[in-house]
Length: 181
Image (tube, rainbow, N blue to C red; front, top):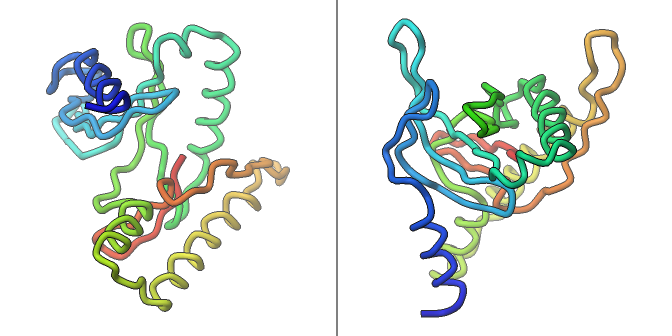
């Protein structure tokens, strides 16, 4: 077992068991862990019994405890929540459950561009140029929208996506291309 595999195995075993309740969410699948958060597929529950799938990003406790980091994250999430565009993943909730800071986002059923490129490489399949251009055009539409977005007084929000990479470009099974993170 490589060092990386051991670290991943340890990280998975450190995580509380699933499924589990988390406020109005039922976390049932851990879909990622990064340097700042754990990401879960969850079911959101409303007061009147409605449900829907969402992604819950739980900020790591050691980072959420840092006031400066928590303030930056909250500011960033509030800006992201103001975005409503077909090519941008919608932020649906920002909150704190106990001492755990979290962001809930639209669930995009599909895969990310990084996964697609890896699969193409593994099978030695060329990505059709028409599809590649469609992805680029849709990503640019989302970026253009976010970068030009203004507040209620007409002042630019000043949003700049600083982490554009294939894993932050989601491709839905319905043919949508959406930016996240």
